[in-house]
Image (tube, rainbow, N blue to C red; front, side, top):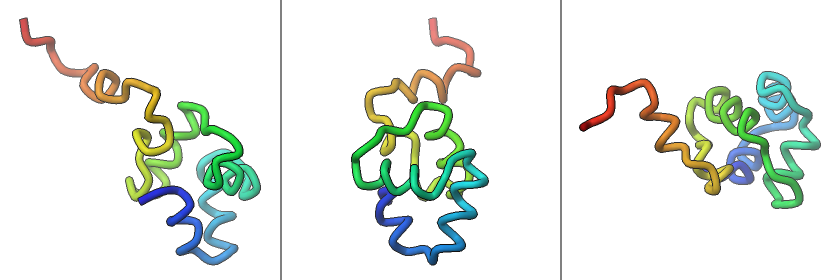
Length: 78
């Protein structure tokens, strides 16, 4: 699901709550959802967590190597 799809599925108080829990404003979320701004990596992580993974870091920031970070706690296969 994209951030825009998620926002469109929520009422205004729910969007404001998601934004607050994620550490941003509803206005900033809408700017990101419509492609006018880009979520920073920290905000991408917060949005994935607060949306219960409905929106993922990969969707928000495809330019970041999330696979490396997601696997960083595992032992390397040598």
